Length: 264
Figure: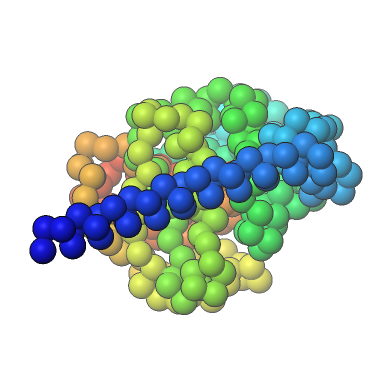
């Protein structure tokens, strides 16, 4: 019996080593491929500079509508060119969200939309290789994430099965890769209803569509003193993020914040 177990363990170790070596080999091949045959920048549709690390060319990156100043404390949108720290925009005054604060990296102009579409609809995770440079453009964004628990906005299991990935998980893990031990990623929420896509809905319809659509999946790794930050790809009206915040706050978590890549 002991010999059979030892043989099984030995086979498992050999298989695990093989899989690790294959993964490293594939990553090496991908790196060489990027160097020899650089990808196409999703914004200008030309080849980016050939360092094997970047996805978007630097020229297009400079053209993104970066949010570099403090804006609305809830949604992060800049207001009239001034550095409003802690003030609230007209939209959030009219319909105040439950969460405490929010940050976004760039506005969703034509170029920003292309970046989000590459991630969300084309499943191109490599776009997020550029995230450290994006964070370098806004020091307050990186500081905002420090010492927090990042909670990705969940997809319903049916949509996740169809799409094959959750872009919010990708984004949260990319933040974690940049910030290291300063943050944790915990998949703490679940989507209880397979809601319709929000794309064509106005503010009122969005709120109605996602009402009570989220719940806390587990509390493992969480306590009431944690700074929680909900992670999503874009902030449009904030309806989805606000419902996620409600699900957490109903369980006693009060320090709930949000962070997204795009706003618009």
